Amino acid sequence: MYDELKEEEIVRKVGGRFKLSTLIQKRMVQLNQGARPLVETYETDKMAIVLKEILQDKIYLDTSQNVGVNESPDFTDAPELNLDDL
Image (cartoon, rainbow, N blue to C red):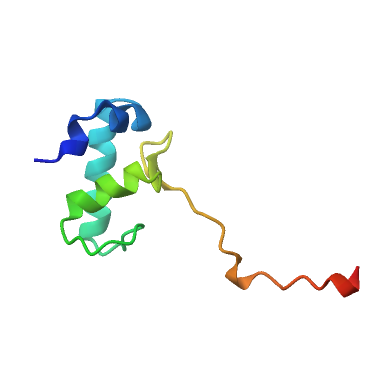
């Protein structure tokens, strides 16, 4: 059904099968409650979205067994550097 789940890469990435199933379950709850996907996709299957998020290192299971989000810095709001001011 989901070939990604058969691969050991995703299990190692999360830290074990129990953590993987916990992460998937908790993220699915978030998506079902209206959270937006953290990956660009036209996929409507929430399980496929969660697997893509894991494989792209967008989410992880923190030490409190909650879903953590790896945020990439957004430089669009950063002020422009003017070299003449240096």
